[in-house]
Amino acid sequence: MEETVEELVTKHTRRELEEMAVQLGIQNIGGTKAQLAESIIEARKKAPPQIVEPRPAEVQLKPEERKEAPATAVEVKPAAPAEVPSAAQGRGVRARQESIRRKSAELRSAGVAIRDEGVSRMAKSVSALKKSIEEQAAENKKGIAKIRTGVRQMKLSIGKTSEELRKAGERIREEGARELNEGLRKFRADLDSQIRENRDAVSRMGSGAAEIRSAMDKMSIDFKKSGERIREEGAKELNEGLRKFRADLDSQIRENRDAISKMNTAARELHSRALALRDEMQRYVEQDVNKYIRDFYYG
Image (cartoon, rainbow, N blue to C red; front, top):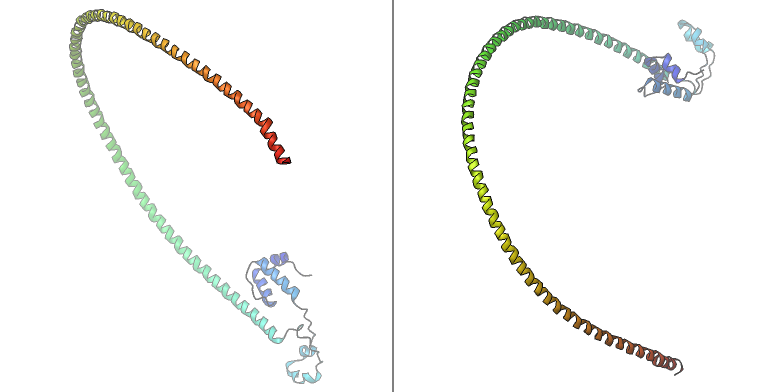
């Protein structure tokens, strides 16, 4: 029973599959294991069945008896060329297998050499890494010592700075209190001066208010007189305007009456013309049209 693709992939290694492909004459042995297994199955299906008859004479005879083999050997019928592989083909397959074995041995040796070289290089790298780690640890120790020294110096500097800031703060507070007291003194003096100025201004405002009040009274009298004069002149001009408006209105009424009479005359004239036109049209329909139709059909 032939193997399936899955059985070939699971039971055989890549190298075994390549050897099978070479034996079957497959030239392209690249691709994945599954593709190689499919190629092997297809080649097996297409390969003709090989029938090789045994040659007992060649198998049983010893080397010293082979000279007499042609006389005593059993005659073997040659098989069809398509069914029996030739000796050259057998030697080619065996040579290819031997070449593959040698190539595999070379690849195995090269892999071992590469692995040994990689291990050697890895050991050197690990040794260099350890050395760099140790050097870095020593540097870190030195850095930690320097950091501790820096921290102590920073603490001393912070303490010194804090003391200086405290003294500066006290000095600023004293100077601020002194300047604040001086400012308050000046503010009180300015406030007293401003109060005196406000009192003088209030007194001046009182006299100014009296002057404003008298000026307003005078202005009110002047406004009253001006209003009476304006009212009288306005009434006079209003009466004159009404008189002119009545005269113009009477004139316009007379003109409208004349226009209405003219419009009535024109309307009567238009009515008479319309009646004449109607009579003319009626006469034309009754006489001329009938005459035209009679002459057109019976003339």
